[in-house]
Length: 178
Image 1 (spheres, helix red, strand yellow):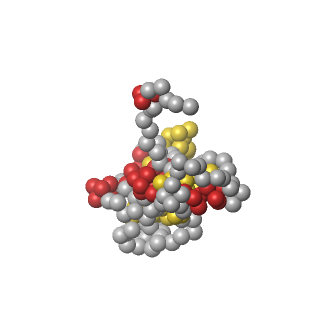
Image 2 (tube, rainbow, N blue to C red; image 1 turned 120 degrees about the vertical axis):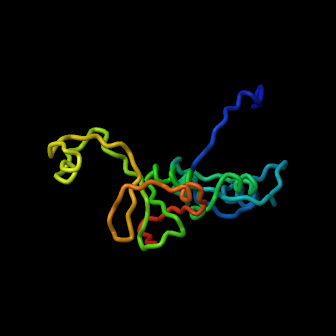
Image 3 (cartoon, rainbow, N blue to C red; image 1 turned 90 degrees about the horizontal axis):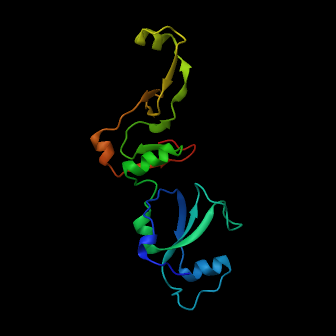
């Protein structure tokens, strides 16, 4: 199948959570049980890529969908989970991940996305006193970012300019303490 014209391709930008390891094109084809096509260089460096945030498994040894990516394409598309821009970190938080800056002091600090309460929840006594609304008034809350602090409590969080421009954001793995 050939494309009729270049304009038939639509532009996209992707944010995917993956696992990857080094593997040549020949290695990948062998791993999949495929013959290397005659017009491809088996020694091409690349990465075995497993998509862990969606996609049905296509190999019995993997939970997610796997594919192969040439090393230059891979390096332009992905970063390690401990060297993210703020934009990538926010996408991860919106997908349910906990995120943190490498340089943050304090054990256990992280930020997460709170989906809010679009249907509303009854406000407690503290909120009623602060807002001068009757206790139990149902209030809708929009999504927001929440931080778990070094003191083991929680506070709504807004990023600083430094946080926004940093490229040292990381995803905190399940059960990991910083």
